[in-house]
Image 1 (spheres, rainbow, N blue to C red):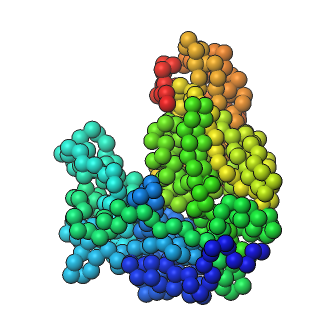
Image 2: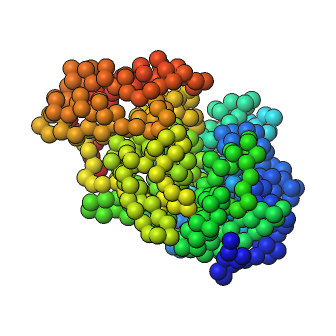
Image 3: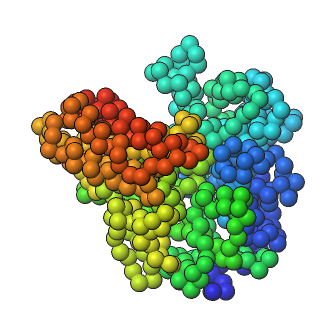
Length: 497
């Protein structure tokens, strides 16, 4: 293993800026979460509730890039990410927002509107709300009688506050109405607000580093070439981006790795290009970054994003990580199968392109070779007319799919000329519903055609009984999903990008 990243920082000089104060990382092992490290520094506002990124009690704010010259405050689950991943970065906890004598506007509104009872979840809510408070594109709208925006959108307040910012925060005793009231009562940041002013400057660079403690190493390579060499020389190393999957393994299953190679800020994996014939999405971009960058250009992905876990998770999770785990219930594969996307895989030997339909080979297995990384995802253009993403789960947001379906239907003169349907949760791998596609193609986009194809779709895959759903339920949901698609799009006009 390379001993020191080029131009990097080594062990003893590694520190984080927390609430404005540079604090040495110390001897924290590579698997130490940011939450545990912060609490070890006496910052106990952030709590561990679930250790899986589902409750938001651990929420803190970090500075992330927002273009070349600006930054934005972003809320993340501190329970999932390694503390070492934030070396050289800026973190703000609930303690850093305000004081007893000078509350932050979010803290003040939560207090005066009764947004806290036991208080266990409150610091996490406050950090998620504060990140939304500082969101640069938060805009005001006229209010309706219930306090929501007057266009019937009950998930955005008259102040532009997006309630999805709180979709990853769970409160068990207060009730959400006073929390929503506090969110919708927030005005604009004061002109002398130092956290607002911070967004006018670039985010800290992610400098190369090596941190070793307890015989385990955490490395941030200088570039993609160095990352690939490290992974090729150390087959058991973990390549880490958002850590929304690996963090759960560390917390719940006590997973450990002798070497963690963090790739989340490698520029080569963070490009987004929209060309005439393809949209190319860097594998290390977070889902929130992809959502902002695409800005609705791919409607199928635009319908996927709000249903993918929570905003807290999407602020860390990457499209490459969701594919890299090989999970049969990941949310992006069904959509990418429907979009006929390709993956660019990279290694020291160069790049190769693999269709998503050929990528998965078995349960959590793929064609990706040891030491190989997903570099980007390519979505071909033009897009189909009718697209949708249906997620069947026990909760509307922040839940794992029982069944996920991605649709992309192209018609010509009222006849289906191409149908692509991706399925998740009904087999050992994400799959294409090829029999259903064949039952649709060459036939009119009509209720009769859809009814016949829905009967075929019920038999796609090999659904099983588990704690999320029965095989019979999954089969029924497959047929219902196609009927719903037609009900929502009874004509062939559909949605276009």
